[in-house]
Image 1 (cartoon, rainbow, N blue to C red):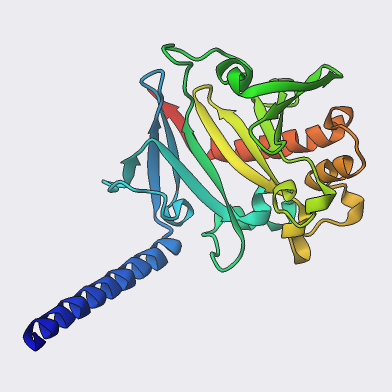
Image 2 (spheres, rainbow, N blue to C red):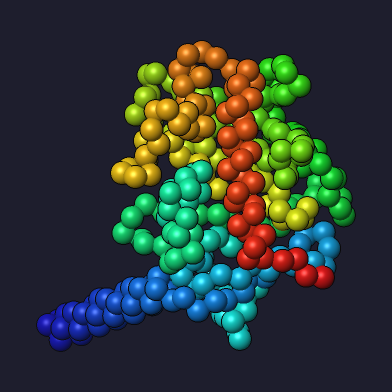
Length: 272
């Protein structure tokens, strides 16, 4: 009995040590990635054509989202995310250099997610313009309509969406998802994070989060006089107003989205 107990203990010890060694190797690999400035290219194939979206950036900006083996500096997968310091995606020009450096994972970071747009079931192509209303309309219920804009209920818990068509000021269709402010759950993070979906080169999507100034500190925290657009969205719901009556807030999201698209276009291309 003692013999088999010793054997069992030796096996368990070996398993634990093996697991610990694997954790150390994984941590070392993650640390190496976090500082690797070698540029790599990620290709994302379209779901409706032979096109591929190529994104070329330093390895560290992709974090651990790359699951396939990188061959000659290139990897292909269905979706990818790239990582930045949090303020860089929130309309703040006072840290422009951060968007060209490896992210500091000891500080708050935020990501841009990329993937291919999906056509309707059994369809072979995408319908141009206002992708979400045409492709995913089954998920939405109209809440209100005014000033040539529409606001929709979506999902659970009162989550809502607003859609903005492509216009002279907006490079691409984009969608704002948000939870209206509820005084009873003021400490909830949901009213302070706003999900954005946008279109990239007609066949690809980009997803990211804009945070309220609650998550920003120091030189990145906007002064009250700046009328930061993400805070403005919260304030109008605190005052029982409608986003559709505040085009200046929508314009803030459009301007921020255009800046992100400009950056991505500088570092990506679509190939046939």
